[in-house]
Length: 371
Image (cartoon, rainbow, N blue to C red; front, top):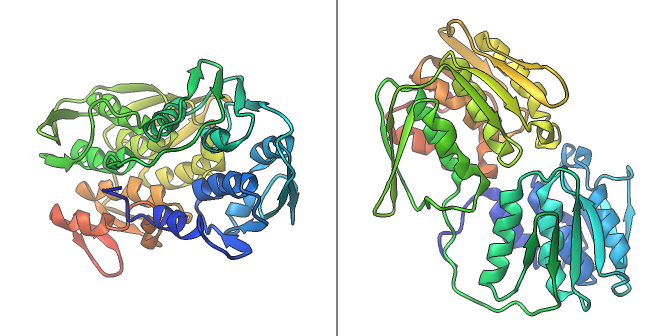
């Protein structure tokens, strides 16, 4: 496998998946928590899974309920429905069909999909209600297929027979979520040309939607010879977007709209409440510092009110959330910016601040990010 990320989440998964320890500390890695809960369950490993204080507030009940139906004994150690939890034993598969909500986290579905081939009876997942982040389900199916597993993916269900994974060489595509911040720098800069490597125009990653979103926010994308070149184009006055399948882009897009006087009409933000922080509340708090707002019209509709004028400087909290730090950093193209607790970027993009320096930004040791 090549081009594997150096992000803490990735390195933590590599370290923990083969760990012999009884207690598995996933820190703040939600993907690691969900995938390892499923993996340890059906490989009959007695493990306690725990994490940071915020991780203990992030629900895992839907996945645990599904695993219990499959025959896994799991006990909550503190609060029902939330980590930490102990996987006791797997007594053998008791059903080959599970109904699960599709509107909470695609990671629950991906976790169950990946363990399905090793179950003696295989598994059918019936996806109930609205399905969020569907591209990640499709990406999971494509990767499983690459490693020799046939996945029958339908609009409201997934069927996977008992099969065997087969080793195969694989090159990991660069992360579109990380790339989105350079779209933001391009959108906010007076002049820009940024070249990004190893991104595919036909990517299955949900966050590749940033190409289409940023067309309206002033960024032209050109794919050529394995490189993506970003340049400036005129932007529109409004953006209407459904983030159901790309919620991790919402913070970045909100900040760009706020700074460029582009009014935003957003739906599909519901899952932001259960991320590394309550990203809705965090955005509302920090956007207020530049005179912008994110207004909840009802449970499904949000309006981004841009700022009439940016202040000369501002200091932004990160709420222990890597995406808050990187979403607000591009404002340094227009004003002096300070990011508190900037080390949070290690979760997904450890070299982010160094990469900013390569664009000519002065990033001080205190992590004041300056024009």
